[in-house]
Length: 354
Image (cartoon, rainbow, N blue to C red; front, top):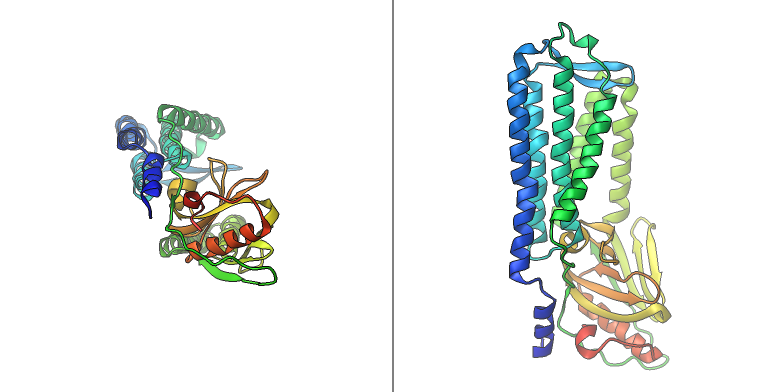
């Protein structure tokens, strides 16, 4: 890579001072604030435990209370939902985005704060309503508390978003150019590749599927009337995984085509819609907030299944498209050659990356 490309990457990178500040504020709102808030809630719950019936109501359904448990349940709920979950979400985000930062990381930091607030409101409401009751069956409906909790959830997401610095996502660093002899008229060159999901993403999805299967089994035994909820969730997760785990990428005289191995979804970008193409290094979590078919907060569309090389296309009157695939530098070179043959506007030597 020449000196000019290296300099442009340095300009595109987030200044270390700004990155440290963004990460520090994310830790404050996603870990420290939930720790303090959960500590206050936990102190109140422990103080109210002697006044609670045993067992306490722990779950409300359409017809009222339908789940009971020991009073200490609310202690564990406070620790796990009020602090552990927001902390894991925040720290996991910081690890995943690495030296990238953008709207996705900022939103997840706000969500961590919102989850902590939601847990605090619901826990205090559920415990407070049962103080002094002899039998938890007589506790009031939790609907009002739930509405208040979700209101707090949305409000704190907004607060978390606003207090974090606004840093534009880092453009993917251009990969080293691959030079391809121009394609003469009458010649036909086709480049084919398969984009597959990363091992980390596959493990995470597998864990989620196992958890949902376990929940489905439990509900099949205990709550047959609500079995449709986990079954529907399992079908949605399975369907989403089936259509997004692997894509077939094709570049030829008709442009770029990306199609799920399941047949749908698919996207086709004709040559006359392409303004420029380049091969870049992509961080799906840092740039798009996750894996799969994503809409980035920076205005790009991503079919991003793993970290690494990707083809980035700027389209006329449409969102730029990013596709992660091995051999992206060769694929971009083939597409650039077709653009050159068609006389389409092409990227500059250093920006094309093809």
